[in-house]
Image (tube, rainbow, N blue to C red; front, side, top):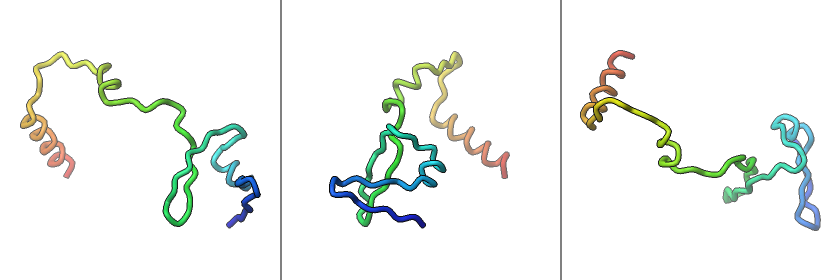
Length: 83
């Protein structure tokens, strides 16, 4: 386990073995999450959040629309086939 010290400016140094292991380089933006008894540092996502409508519009289906019952039956069949 590595330790580090909080500077008077509120800065910390992340130990080199951790930076290397996570491939974190200078300039990387991190998200700081309060966990209650500490903090969690995670790399900021490199792309903007999108909604399902933004993504699903590229999916094409030319067949007859499926009902919820059709989808449930297909799921049930998949489970039975697997087990």
